[in-house]
Image (tube, rainbow, N blue to C red; front, side):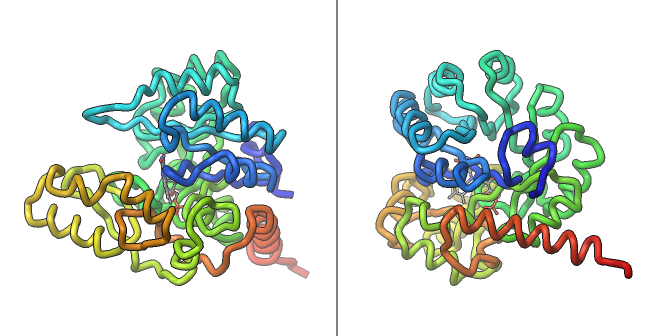
Length: 323
Ligand SMILES: Cc1cc2nc3c(=O)[nH]c(=O)nc-3n(C[C@H](O)[C@H](O)[C@H](O)COP(=O)(O)O)c2cc1C
C-alpha cells in the first residue's frame, strides 16, 4: 500500500483524489471513487440549489461509509451563486473534506475546521499555495498547466510547479494536471507530492455519468487536442478542442469580448455534450492527460491498477535491486 501523510490525514487507502467536475461530479461517481479507496468528490455547483447538494451528500453517505469531498468553486462572477448557502450545507452536514478552488479559501477555513471539515485547496502557483497554507488548508493540490479546467495564467507545467512547491510547502501536496496512470502517480510522489488529483481520467470510467461517446472520444484523443480558451480575458480554461472552442479562440483573438462568446460557452451547451454525446454541442472540459487514457475501467479497477503500477515503478525503477 502507498501510505503517505495524505492517506493518513484524510483516512483513505489510496493516494488518489477525484477533482471537482462540473456536471459530472455526482454522488454516485464520488462514492465509486471513495469505495475504490480514493477520495471522491461531489461538485457543489452542478446542483441547482443548496438543498439539491444536501440531497447528493445524503445519497453519497448511503453509497459509501468512506470519506468523500465536496468541491465548492468560488469564482468572481457578475451573478454569483449563493456560495455561503452551499458552504453551509458542507458545514451543517459535516462533509469530511471540502475541495476549494477559484479564490483564496481564507474566509471559509475556520468555519470548515470548526465543523471538522478538512480543506484541500487547489493552487496554480507556489505563491497561491503558500497563501492557502497560511490560511489553514490541510492539503494543497498543485494544478499544472496540463490540467483541464482553470490552469491559471502562469503556464508552469506540473514537473516544475510541483517540485518548486515541495521546497516551500509543509502540508501534504497533491499533484494535478496530466496524470492518468501509475507512472504519473509514482513520478508525482518522487517529485514531492503525497498523492494525485485527477479529473479527465475519471471521466473515462464506467461510473462517470456521461455519454459513452464522450468516454470513447477521450480514449481516442491525444495531447494536441485541447484548446486554451479565455486567455485574452485572463481566465484561461483548458477544454477539449472542437469547432466551438476553435470559434471562441478566433473571436477573442480578433478582439472580441466575453459578450461575443457568451452563447457559445454557455454551461448548458457543455452539459448537452455530456448528456447526448454530441461532441460539437458546446464547450467541454478535458486535459492533456487524455493522451494517456486507453480504456474505460471501473473506478475500483483504475485505482487498484494505478497503485499497483506505481508500486512496481517505485520498486523497479526508482529503487532497483543493486545485487
Ligand atoms: C469535466 C471537468 C470539469 C471540471 N470542473 C471543475 C470545477 O467545477 N471546479 C474545479 O475546481 N475544477 C474543475 N475541473 C478541474 C479538475 O478538478 C482538476 O483540477 C483538473 O482537471 C486536473 O487535471 P486533469 O484533468 O489532467 O486530471 C474540471 C475538470 C474536468 C475534466
